[in-house]
Image (tube, rainbow, N blue to C red):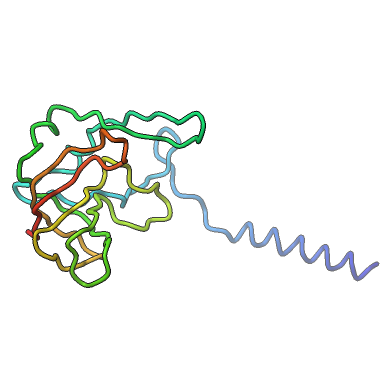
Length: 170
């Protein structure tokens, strides 16, 4: 009994010591918020290119199927995006392969870095389905610049708002 009490006392002292040894919280800014530098940024817009900010201006019109609970989404394209339809655009992003191999003809171009466990997956206005005229070298670590003809899609509720046809690197 005495031994159990000594162990509990020792554990209590050890717990308090751990709490006191913990680093102090980050200095607060006015308004009670800790400074945060968000590293979750879209790929930089290439010279003469289209920004992800422009593409992300497309609004999402969601509906939920009452029987299945599945959420379907249609795009509401703003005028700035509608003017790009059928035109050749240049955009930078991270490649997500849809085929096997070091070179890809069909892939998804993500506006944000893939695989961050602290953020939601890409929304339909944050990626482009790409069909390249010739295979593009796969680089999953660095942004790739892609040029192609933009199609505005998504009225079929497929969840794909943008598609590049006859695309190429650069």
